[in-house]
Image 1 (spheres, rainbow, N blue to C red):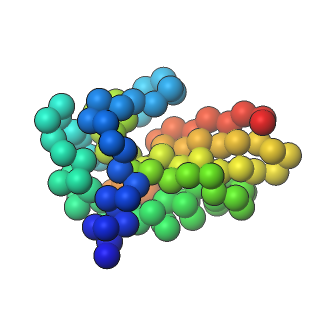
Image 2 (tube, rainbow, N blue to C red):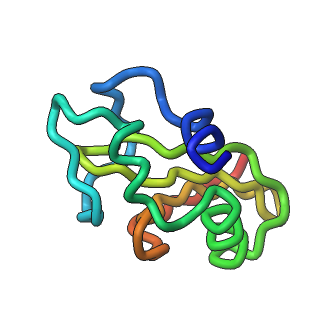
Length: 108
C-alpha cells in the first residue's frame, strides 16, 4: 500500500526540476539514470507526515499538493499549502529526516 501511495505522487519526467533556486542537499541522491520508484523505498517520511510537517511549519490548513519528486538530483517531498490571508507556501522536505530543506511563500 505504501509503495502504491508513493508511486502515485512521483513525477513522470526523470529530468523534471522545480522553479526555486537550489540551496539544499537532500538525503537521497539520484543519478540521472536512477529510478525514483526504486529510490522511494528509502523514504522514511510518508506523504501524511510530509503534509503534517508543512502544515506545522506554515500554520496552514489547506493542502494544495504533495509530491515525492526529483529536484536538483535529490529525491524530496514537495508540498504546497495555502495559509492564512491566501498566502501560498511551497516547502521541500527531506524524505528521510523530515527536515524542511527549502521554503518559499507568496500571496495569491
